[in-house]
Length: 377
Image (cartoon, rainbow, N blue to C red; front, side):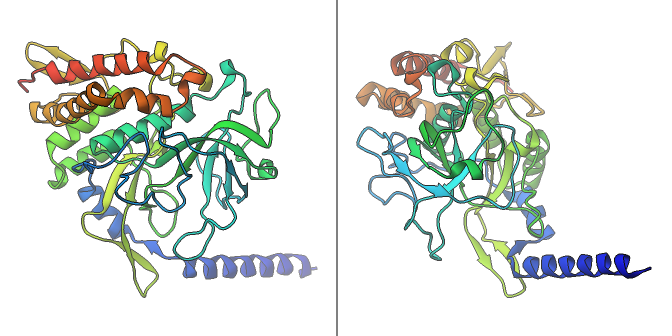
């Protein structure tokens, strides 16, 4: 009479043993490493002066491993891939699929897995997913200014079997093996979670406060970061969309990872709800939604940011200057060779919204607000 319960218990023990064995083989960050990152992670660094936001890399160096090839105008070439399903679904409600290109492997010889955002409500102009373009623009301009971001591309993707790697179903449209202007993402680094829990996120206000109290991230860098979030209109600020990540780590003999000093960063890992925030995916990254939203307010010499969920909205003069200097470099590059306009054109957002020239004009207007402001606080 006890045979069935015993059998169930034995199966449970076997599953527990297998799970423990798999976990033992993984290399994980410890709680101490996570706590260290929460005190010392960087939100900004001096940008690479040779970084080209149109191409997505410094042309004096090679593109990152696995990057889709781009032409001189920054347009990614078509990609053909096969389904490469990720073990965990991850957060977010927008359907995504994962795939890899045969022969494209990392340093260990493992296939490089792309996270792909398709146009899940349909490929027609008015149904295209604005998150794709918002992530591209946020990534390219963030890196040009010294902020951290995942690498993003917009490319035509063909994947005949990728329906089986979708994280959720499409809405009002069928999956098609051909997805025009889809978003391709490669992560910036390795998320700093605890014991491979996959919980590497951190709320904006709480994380920035801890970093400020930690003493290694300056008030100016944090204020510049807050202003930048307001500039791009980062609207979906739930905790899961920001993360702590390590750019360079060491594997230890005891199945732990140590993030090398100076390589822990805090950044927005999901920049889809930007450049015109909306709860509707097809209305994101529209000039109509982004225009007129000023990133900074000045009253009686006191400056505040309009960024969401950042806690203290006061902006120091040093923080304003830090972002202003970077924005001025971009405006100078726009004047000399149309750099800002070229980035907007490379995003392909004009295929479903306004022209790159109109977008660049609004970019310049917002930038000048920050450049010309003066903050007494």
